[in-house]
Picture 1 (cartoon, helix red, strand yellow):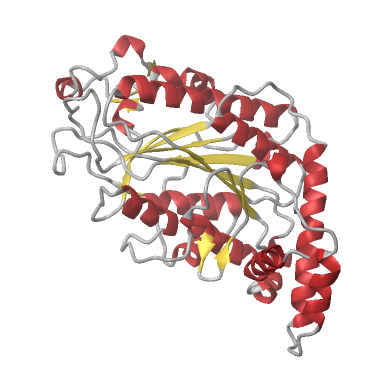
Picture 2 (tube, helix red, strand yellow):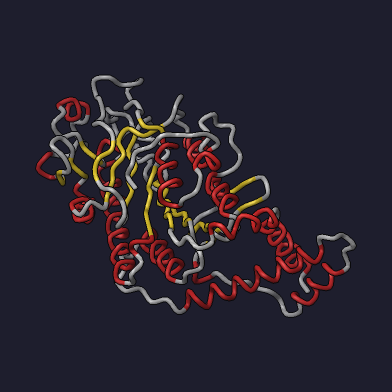
Length: 388
């Protein structure tokens, strides 16, 4: 037996099963709800002003002589707003009322630090002092530590709490337990030596974790996508998300990240490519779900930790800002524009002022989609747009 491997597995199991009894006490009431929320983190600070463009506002073009997007290239969504041309795959969703844009989203006393601002979004605590992720609190409220999964990347704060972390899987292809021969019997024997009343519970919890992992691996292996996904990291993660949802394994939240949005230089080149990847991947994902009869069970909610400055910089990019946009996508989304166009004549230190607290947007998803008390998860009541 490999001692290091044994200790690692034991620590993982105890972390995941910490607090399991109180989880299980709540599980029955929410177990039958099969709605899934896919949270998409656009890391780096996506420029909302070039994502949803106020093309009738002369101040926009004056502040961005080199990176502004011409009106003729935009995809109109209202009398004065147009989507970035890379989001052409979103046009049908918007026309069908399945895409909602939230304007001027942020939080009080904004922070331009990537780390600090992302921590605020991940904990839903604007003080910056929060330590427990908002997704981990969803897991507590539902009563199932396996109801939420992060796919790809290092575990984000949103899925962590003082007891550890919810599952974070680098890829479904590698999702399996690599246990040395003889480890499981030894694991059971060592647990049986404990004289505490918790030994049997921990042993059963560990064995349940192993069985859950094996079962999920087998179910995922049997999934076949109904469409061909683009070749990008975010498309791969969305295909894996579809496979998890198709297994019917009670995935209530799936967390994904797409990096690269810190566009200090060459923004048109970099943001154009990233938004194209996101739009094409999500279009494939939505079509896959539709063909498998699952599109009414899934909603995507996308955010970025902050927006960018209104004025472009000398490197053809934009620096860290404040207010930005969020979007929600899904068959049951109430599409449209929520909030007013950015007021470019009334800025905060050169930034768009936030008017919608992101926690209100979260609250709408929690209360109306997942059917979970937003005040329990977020710690207080927030009013959000009625996009679902």
